[in-house]
Structures are given as structure tokens and as C-alpha cells.
View (tube, rainbow, N blue to C red):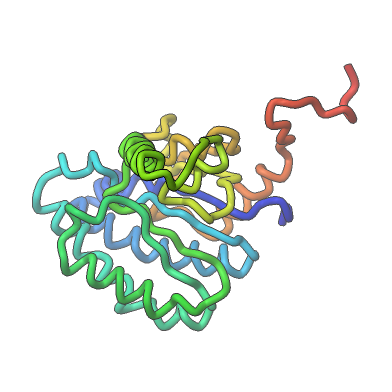
Length: 237
């Protein structure tokens, strides 16, 4: 694996379409998607990835049918009741980013418990983006900075200090974004953090996204040359 790859972010798309292909209701796809979270998280941990951020629920996803939203919000209980022990065995630490205010208390309580129980783990961070929106995050960070500036806690602002006000403050820069189901857009995900990330859009629907496909994405990442706006002097004119 390319040793520069520390942080992978994934837009887990295609659960509903996968279920439709199986002639099942959409919630069946979300249930299968949870199983893939376990598969990919453990594999990424074994590869030595430092952080895996998964787009689980956006600020726009509340527009979906109430029944589907309620089912999605029940999935943290399903996931952690089945797999928390395995996460602990793999030294994985759970985190969550997003606006907690609208998340049902039962789901939030389960996340808090998982975060607490894994807080001492020193391996990969499994970071769930729930009720997350990139624009909302930037506005919140700007407000927090303005408040600190008003109170005299900070006197200047640059990119590094502003990044510390984001939900992802303290995490490694996102090196690679993967979006499944071949939708070619960011959907309001990590808009600030993805400025120089490599991006891979795969046709595979999330419930079919295997560790082997993750390996292929990482291999593709390894073939990319990241210049960050500069020039690779080893290349010929």
C-alpha cells in the first residue's frame, strides 16, 4: 500500500438501487450496507489506514420518506450491537462528525457509548459523518472563529488555524475520496477537506463494495502523482 495514504473518505452510495435490483425494499439495501461498513472498516484497519470517514447520513437526507429515515437512524444500534466487540479487537476507535441536534436521542446515545468504549484504542479511526453537510460545517466553523476572535482568543486566521475549527480538526488530511454507484458529484461532503484529495468514482453499488475493490482503489491512488499545484521535476517537458 502507498505509505502516503492515511485518510480515506467514502460516500457510501447505492443502497436503494442495490435493493431494487434484488427486488427488495430500500431498507433491505441499507441493512446490507451496514455489513459492508464492517467489512471495509476492518480491512482498512488491517492495511494500516489511519482514518476512514464514511458519509452515513447527510443534512439533505431528511428529505427522504420518514419510514426510511427512521430505519437508517436505527442502524447504529444494529451495527454496534453486532460489531463493537470486533472493532475493539481490531483496536479501532469510533468518532462521529455532524450536527448532533437533529439526530434521535437513542441513536446519539449509542454513538456516544461506542465513542466512549473505543476512546482508548490507538488504531484506525472509524469516523461516521451523520447529519453532516459540508456547507453547514464551514458556516459553523466561521461562526466559532468569529466568536473566539470577538473574545480575544485568536488574533489572526490562516488555513491551518481555520481547519482546526472544522469537525475534522486534528484528523489527517483526506488523501482519497471514493464514491460508489458512479454518481459524479460530492453531494456536500467534506467540501473544505477535499481541496487536493484524489477522487475515484466506481460503478459498484455500496453493498457490493468489497475489500478487493478497496484494494483496487488504493492501487489506482498509488498510480496518481499528487502535485498540490506544483510541478513534478522528474517528468520530462
